[in-house]
Length: 310
Length: 311
Image 1 (cartoon, rainbow over the protein chains, first blue to last red):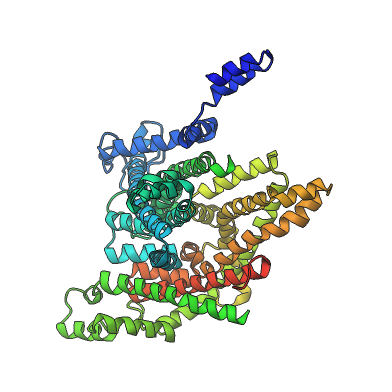
Image 2: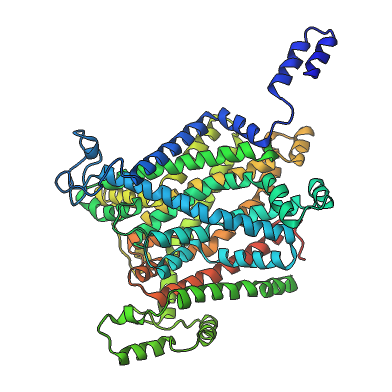
């Protein structure tokens, strides 16, 4: 590095190691992403929470391919056996049909994670595309898109979710669609705002004067510069979907014939009077840790990726 | 001010029409014809035709839409499938119970949240603040259903401090049924509110005018309570006003669990009975309230923030 040599050439011995040290720690042209990863890793709590989310994801995948806790509806004991240490399957007790609550929690994990994933996969493309179009083109396109999301967000989320799952017929498909089409608005707003800011910046003007088309300016030039907002949004999106699935399933609008955390909590409301607390506790604890992890990771991502507070 | 208000109200009309259109498309087009579901498999053609006529499903879509707009304007949403009552009567009976729970709970939550947020942000960076943030995040992450179920089980069923659920038409005896759902409401929403308010306050403390105030030698207390507090009221008030329209529906899970015959219970019953007209009316009504809530927020903005002009 030339700057290190220059520092040594100054012949001030005390400062040269410091300067070369700075040069080593802060190489030129470090990207936002590398910088963000570095900052995120400094937050030990967030890294631990990311590991928790990864753990839930692994559990969900293993359960999806029936490698663990399968089949979930095997009868392993009597009705309402309290939790016991005799085996892992008994560790959360049994439900009314003598099925393992632990297995049900694991399948609930699979449902929750898949709902979060699919809802995000539906919502992110909608939010990014509409936000980009509205922010970039402005004019009537902007007005139409803003009108559309203002309208949609005027309907209270829970009523919209109930309405969509209702008219589409209960079940997983309806849940995916309902959560996907209701949760893109926040991201769309952010992306639109960023596009409005970026479209008149020098690098975009330079690109257009070199003959870049609208498509190229949107996708090749501006989008990579605002894409970190998708990641910041993802964590909250995922968490919102998990929470909403539980409430919809609890209302009987969600998953049918399979255990989900919401269905388990719904069952538990009648069991509690008989002193059967473990089904509720199992679903609650499982949900609590993943939601907590998403909350903390979401905050850390915002801190790491939002250059404003650098 | 009047002209400003008028302009805002006219500006809200496209949103109202949009809400009506989306609700209409959802319920009348995607939802399809629910008459068979209501009458069961053994309905005669005569019965089906009569019912279709009563709910207007035999009309062309555009007529149905105009009819629905007329329903919104006249606040007459027809009869419920399940209870056969007039929906407008059901709704006006439900508003009272909903608000007796929602209004006190809302005020207690807001006041407590602002006070706690002030305390933790006054001690920003110290252990009080750190502890506060941890408690908030944990509270936000606990599922609200768990608060409700465990609260009902432990406080009402095991300890017997409150009745498990119920309702009294007499105002003076209502409080005992309201107390526990109110407590749970406060616990559920406190975490989110405190965190939001704390962020709003701390954002202000980073502003230049705060540095100026400190630089000219003002005591930290004066800086905090005189300068920061006043300015951080803008985002706080916005957030609070935005929550008001949701109050009507806000606690629908709580209402369901504690047998409070409010709008939330009506909605939950409608879900369980596949009562589409009631769901449609509730969706419409709550959306309209949201739109007017947004309007109210903007108006409040102009009142608390002199920088916002009435343009």
